[in-house]
Image (cartoon, rainbow, N blue to C red; front, side):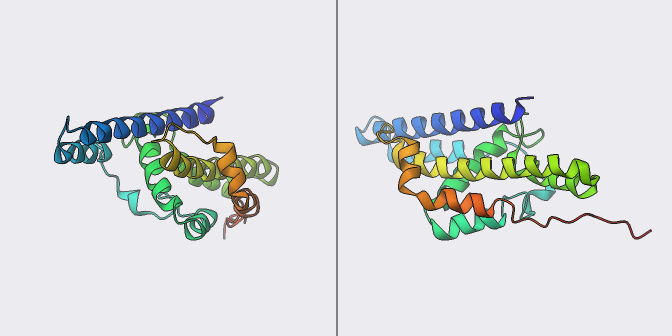
Length: 190
């Protein structure tokens, strides 16, 4: 218990630390302490994952291409960069061999959906609640990454809750769209 909360906390902490390091490198570049090419090389190295690529990395669901997430990216273009940033952090914090061993939130959505599909009706209720929780958490992590990219370099002068209040439509979007998955029972033909 608590694995999902631990993962979310680690993902947010890693995101914030990455943004702090990037900001500091850019400040060193601005005062000519480090050359622009060196900073660019360091940031590029930092953004490349040293972890192996897996064959399912091209699966749209493993990549987090759920309907409500696609709607978010379409309606709020700044979230495209936020999603790229948070997906990279999720992958690094995720399960071995691609990650360091915690949990990959996008994969949790899919794996739990598979469990839902083969579960008895009484168990499906619990699996569906878990899936919706994972989807909502992923959506808000993308929103937080977008907020952090915008306000992190300036020291987070605006609170995330204020940023969300300025984007009220996002709360409605996730509430109405988090369960846009195919909710059916798999029935054996035998």
